[in-house]
Length: 135
Image (cartoon, rainbow, N blue to C red; front, side):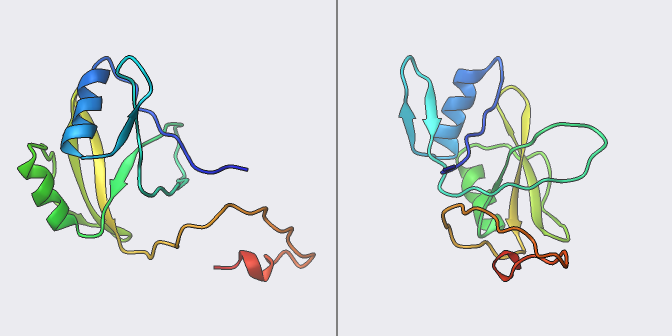
């Protein structure tokens, strides 16, 4: 049974990025040996968006974007954009070592409480989802 998701940044500046995530973003971590840090991310979600090209992206979200930006700036994080209001939330971008730009957003949608993954039920012959699948 799937328990979570593991994301990766690939960069020639791996040590600097690890230090940034540890020291600036403040994530707890496990040293798996030789300085390889695996960070414990408190929550995660996964979106799939339409695109003409195939790629992946990592972004972070928060409860109060203005407070979070202020806190991160006080730790030396450089923001590459102001905060914009989007249909789905408030959005800004910050830089990580190696000139990686990462999104930070405050969602307007309600996050579901953490729950274990379950097997999806088959749809009925009418093509409608079962009641359990509706949200």
